[in-house]
Length: 267
Image 1: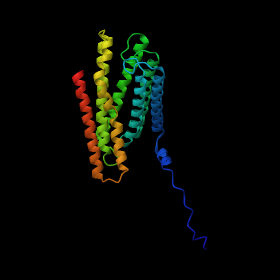
Image 2 (image 1 turned 90 degrees about the horizontal axis):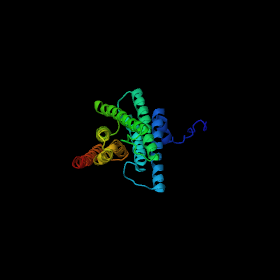
Image 3 (image 1 turned 180 degrees about the vertical axis):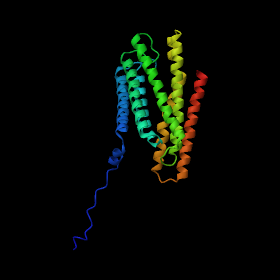
């Protein structure tokens, strides 16, 4: 009788990481793995730069595979995570993410290829092959604009889910990301016009004023939602957490505005 009154053996606590991984869909897992590989590619080329040397700035340097690998990898992982808070069809989101991941690989791959060939990756029309690579990168940039604009519109059509402040963070992150896309498109458009009119060197120099704006606005879609998520793990009140997110959005907006003023004054 005493044995029948014994409590059942206690199960070991579930692994939180295993639970998280179980909820990650195969397409999301593929995007995250791809993002990690792109980041590792950027870090590997930082090592190449340390060994090989050469200029850090300029149209031909190891800076480009480093910065593009890191930026595209982080952005791919950020967008994959952040879009889980959007109210969009799962099938549509999966298709958009897979196309986005493939486009990120093409962009970083083309830039890395040209770095190893010791020729510019963008705005290079010297040979038919270089022209083809430059056009491929330009078309890929256009695809990025379309995909990320669709996600941005979805974030404003329906309020994103998530903890307090996440909706504001996601919407602000995508809005600032559109600024990055616009500045990137402006750099390519102006550069192509200068190349077509015979001003190759001026085309390379023309991108400099917009680079700070492009760089600052590119990662808001990661920084702001990550802050909202971290705050949800604290014991702070909902009002305090929302105010912190709102203050962060204000500071980020001010930084983007300052970079925009600099671009206008030096363009």
